Image 1 (cartoon, one colour):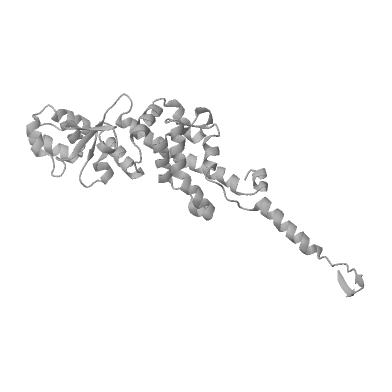
Image 2 (cartoon, rainbow, N blue to C red; image 1 turned 90 degrees about the vertical axis):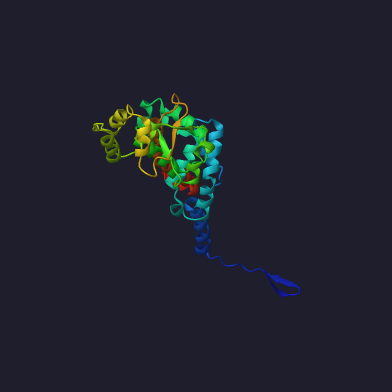
Length: 285
């Protein structure tokens, strides 16, 4: 409105630039359809409670999983998701601590092997209950040393990480043993052959068979022949062999590495569906 005189008011028709108006509306619609939105950490609740998962620790396992990965969701909101892709070691540790796994009916094809191994969940439960906050590298070290002895025992020495040096305090899963067999199984074939020849024992073709032959000899004669630096290693075994053996730990390690990759991709897809606009979701992106 424009005032012409104190006694007269004239009306003016304002001009509208419809191109600009439509541009503003279009930008708003595009942001709604295509925009990337922040997702709250509670999205992990929706992921875990989708009916596809369970935990060997029950609901406490879900809580542990969320606490482990909560910071990942926050970093996703702060930056592009590609730059904050969930680290596989981090996912492995989250699973090892929480005991989360897919229910059989929702197992992806890549994990179908788990259906035929009923014992792995028992071992998984035993490990998750007794092995909180272990890092991926430490767990892998234990598994590889068990593999060296066909699952019989593993060793810890002074050069290991602080966690491994105090593993019997950090976990009730293992006990220390004074065991000549455990010490011999940690040696290589060359070292065993030298001990056998020195004692006049014919070495066998395998480590296990050579150790069995040496165990028939006087232990007091064998002790001084152990290589320097290996005779004072601490030897450990799993306490309850009914629940888990060294071989079971190896299988759990194998399964969790596969599970880590599958669940990471699953979680990434789940979060991205919530981050992007409705048109993405309608298209299944």
